[in-house]
Length: 338
Figure 1 (cartoon, rainbow, N blue to C red):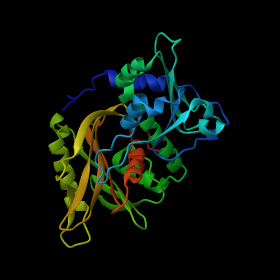
Figure 2: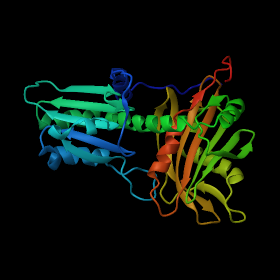
Figure 3: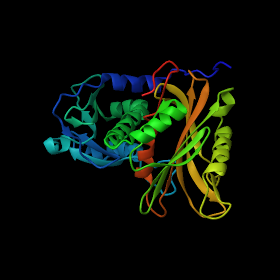
């Protein structure tokens, strides 16, 4: 059956594409970018801005609580700096948002830069006439700003993992699923079935897992949240078992997962975030699930990441998995497997 689902262009994705296209190129020899993971540096040209409504709007939006985590954790940790103090030490930060309130500008100007002072780095500069114009422009474009900085977080993590890629697992996955995905060396294949694989990483106190499974594409009902949950539960009941006899992983419905349609590396997909639990045991944690349409091969590919890290913050471990999942690409039937 041919694909019925198509991607619809929308203002949000068009603006995000513009941001990426507008980025300036990186001159060679730049320093590695600095700053903590999931941190945003906000530069203001008036030291009172961050203490007023402008600062609170920025902090509340970029510091909003992430969905699908058991503990409240902010999307970004936001730090403010006054423009005269924005010297070379701070210019190497990996995420920079510059707000310039300048009465000599009649129209708002938004600039974006990639790897301007360091690499990897993303910079957005908003120059506006007054605070009222700032609020108007920020409200209109804030979601695309978030996407822009989130993409840089994924890019930064993927570059770090790329230096320790496990080529043996890569070859195995490519051969099995006709796809490429970055898997670091500290992961291993924990379970394999015909159209399923569980790749696992075990730390001293935590565990990360990546599930990849495929089914033929028949109709658009496969993208309904209930169907995504049913498919995940079916796969994990048979393949992701707990330490207690008869226990297995399933989606927790105490707080139902949230999902929405997205463009995923140029393909249609549904992103789902929620909590998993063990039926018959007391373990649990967050998961992120991407149900992706492989139009060329008329199939659905699901890549799912989950974390177990009891009583600890899980944002960074979940973000790591997200960055790996976003390296996914499909191999065309006539493309030679690497």
